[in-house]
Length: 368
Image (cartoon, rainbow, N blue to C red; front, top):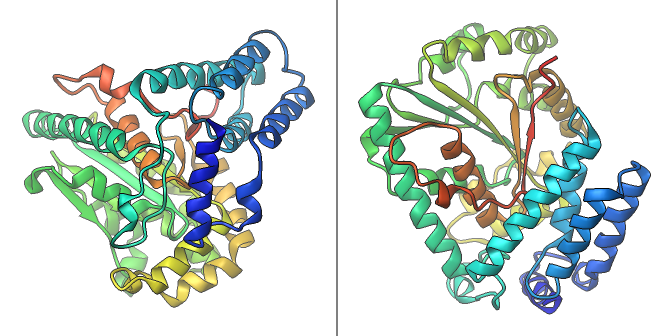
């Protein structure tokens, strides 16, 4: 079954999405890396070892991206708390998810129809499975929308991440079949001098009660893009970092919902996506001079991103990190996460319990 992973990587190579060398990396490299990390942390024993060995066995009968699992392990080790318990829970969620995928037909040949018209990045999730799962999730989103209209509750979703991380495409998956009267996509331009002085009101005024409000970038511009690009002052940055938690708490005092999604990609993936944008007759307009700068400022962006996570991932409003190197999988996981956290009427839990745990990490600090 590992041959199917190789086929996906070969397609990416032909499309210029990955280097030829990367397509030859065997799953054993990532398995070994996982074991080394677990041994280094003193937790490659007991339940952790047993469950990981079962996951490896499942790799003989279905597609498993061990590179993705490797990344998920590293993200979970960043979380505070009992490392052994955190990784036990993570591997058990991965194992249960893989057993579901085995029943759901994920282990099939990747389909290539998507590439006939405009190049689209390949995905490990088969096209038919993806479309079916997205369909049922969008049905659930309609239930949520109707519940919000009935109760007057409000949902606010922040979509953040590096340029080309998949924020826009995920928002499209959210709203594709919603009633336009029940949601609002908020993508704001360069702030005026007055808006710079009234930063919180600039964003608060955009939120419409009783709707799903989706911020394609948000107030976090001040805590990330502005300092990285040199657009804001140090005083503005410090004020933002000091007051953002109170601002977010004030948005949900009436029992509304706020979610902060961070779409994570690696530098090589961002570079390839920038290249695809420039070459696409339909998407060239998405490429801006700032995109090129972002590759040069990658490390500086990382520095401010880590500060952001450390300071603003709070008990009430943690950052939800979603690995978005595979846009189809990350999009499904983002929708599922939101739906699982809201008690709307008529919820179909069976539809919502099929996530890729390798893709999603909640940076929620200890309640202590």
